[in-house]
Image (cartoon, rainbow, N blue to C red):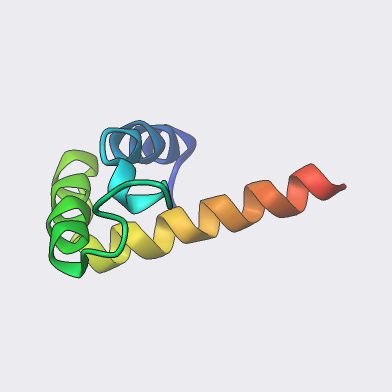
Length: 70
């Protein structure tokens, strides 16, 4: 799995693209804009592609939510 440093870098990179996480964003439902954003995030973090970045971010977000409930 990814390292803590990579996870932090991913979170910081995603923060620059509100369309990926903010439902109030005007571009939240724009699939093309989100695909380009995930592609940029994957390049910044050093992952293979946008899908990998998206899946890793979803994993981290879900893990955070589960840990917060406990």
